[in-house]
Amino acid sequence: MLQNTHTGAKGKFKIPEGIIELPLKPFKVSNAKNILIISDTHFPYHDKKAITTAINHRDDIDTIILLGDLMDFYQLSSFAKNPSLPAIRDELNICKQFLEHLREKFPKAQIIYYEGNHEIRLNRYIFQHAPALFGIETITLATLLEFHKTNVQFVENGTGLKVGALHLLHGNEAGCRGGINIARTMLLKTNDNCAFGNFHKTQSHSGRNLDGGEFVNFAIGCLCGLKPRYLPINSWNLGFATVELFKNEFDFQNKRILANYNVRSN
Image (cartoon, rainbow, N blue to C red; front, side, top):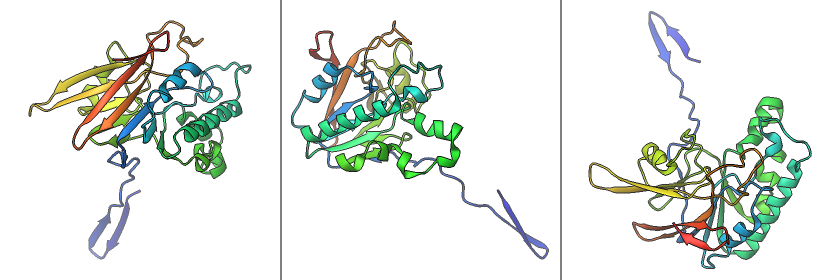
């Protein structure tokens, strides 16, 4: 609210600072060289073989980025729900076990968990049905998944991450709804080098600015089941990505997992 204060004939109009909802710059990932990016496992609707394929692809990984929607939070969705499907506690237990396994396999790697739109369901449910509970530490994702035990760093959904010259988003941030070439759609939004999940398909699209500089957007495949009951006919594919950083460049390998679980660079 604007505060109007008057002193004599001359009025002083004080404008308070505006509310900054999100940081202007992305979270910068440092000390990274060989990066594994996985997204959209949607526990407990995950593909176990696909996840195993992704995390066993390379042993020299020093940074793991979980790019959102590791959990599905089905029971917190706004859709009609089948009560016979797994409860939230089951999703949490599976995700915790996965994080423990990841830490055991990569004991020295930094692990960064970037919030996806499905993880946002937790706070949205609290906002809508129990706002008085918002902010209680025991019902935050960090506490429920016990990040302190696996040394996982959590970054809220918003302006994304940045590794070298590459931006990383979950994919929901730009408000895109999908389409035939989501990599092109996102490129027109980001106007920068960017990789993202969310759309469950492996794609890339490049462009050039007026100064002759090139930039590219990568859509990363998912690691969940490809035949969900709510959308059995779709164009999804299994996949993950690796990134190797150099001084001013990066080598992005967008990996597609085939039906026989072999890996192909897209």
